[in-house]
Length: 189
Image 1 (tube, helix red, strand yellow):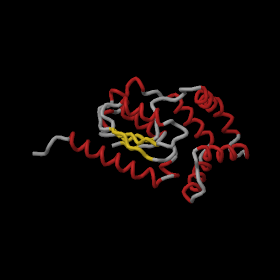
Image 2 (image 1 turned 45 degrees about the horizontal axis):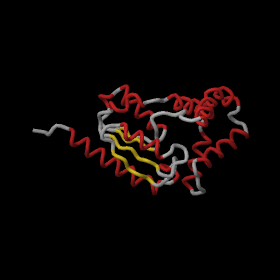
Image 3 (image 1 turned 90 degrees about the horizontal axis):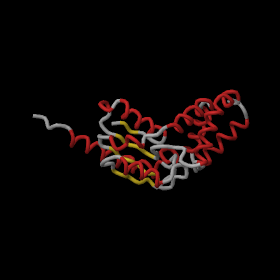
Image 4 (image 1 turned 135 degrees about the vertical axis):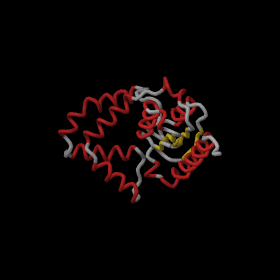
């Protein structure tokens, strides 16, 4: 079973697409089947592609440091120990690598083949998400045959910043997917 969140859910979709025989089930969370659906997203992802070289140069810049704080705040971060840990993790990453990853996410488009996913799949929908609207998360689930939907009353970064709301929905998704995977296995003699 491949279990992922956010950008990792895009990776999980791609792993199933490229190696379907190695994936027994999927748990996708706070994700979509494509980006660049509106002007804001197009500008954001295109800017990340163009800015990768510049970002490498600015990696120690105070401007980049302030931008990383603003990015975490945009994800509805709070002042808890978990939020401070997440912010420190974000700051310790290379701005160039973050830019490259975000640019790659912007090129992702799985809509044409989602209906081919043939393994038990659960989608954790983050219902207070300001990054990926709930409607897009539900549309992704609707495109995958038999996908179950599990709601987490948290924002996009809920897996870290609002774990008390996210983890129960994720565990429910994992239990459901695991049970469905067991139902698909042939009975032992």
